Picture 1 (tube, helix red, strand yellow):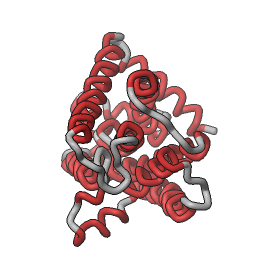
Picture 2 (spheres, one colour):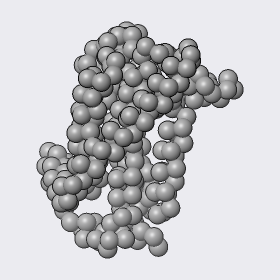
Picture 3 (cartoon, helix red, strand yellow):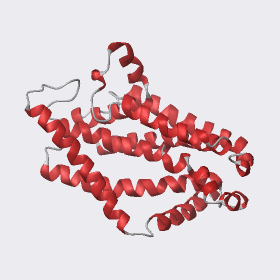
Length: 267
């Protein structure tokens, strides 16, 4: 109960801080729309030129293909991305870290509160993007919304656990926070967010397909493109579900061992 109470306090605090300048809502939405149209127009030009498609990407489903990847990837990056990983580093630079560490606020709920800001941005921008895609492009989602939601939840838990581990290590060694950002970018390159993994050479394709990010995106695409159910995705769900348990527990253990050193960050 303490965790959820402090999570609410931290979440409200971070929302107020971020939206102190309300213009940020506009810039977040415009940025997402511009990026969306960029990918849509590029792939439309390629497919209109006679490209037949690779893997699950075809001229008929490219909008759904790209949206499934980009929307889920945003959840992944918000979970293990900059807000959580750099939290203690940023607080050290703003010289507020000692006050946070001696406060009674649950420190893990504090980190998840920072992620909550990104999830609010995610809900706002992607609700608008999906509406635009439905109105202006041939967007259709053929599978269960409930199953898609389950994939989002287990993905969030899995990758926020990784984010918690990286944030804990960054409190111990500041440079690890930057390593976490680099790892996120590498995963973006290898996970087939905006293109099928069939474009990779065969020697690394098998390794790429084992990445949890690749598995999560592939599972969501199978639901959206072909209407796959739980039985067809049982392997991916068990895999991601296991990580959703292992990574948060591991992150909690590492965090509890390192948090007492967080006052010495950067030393």
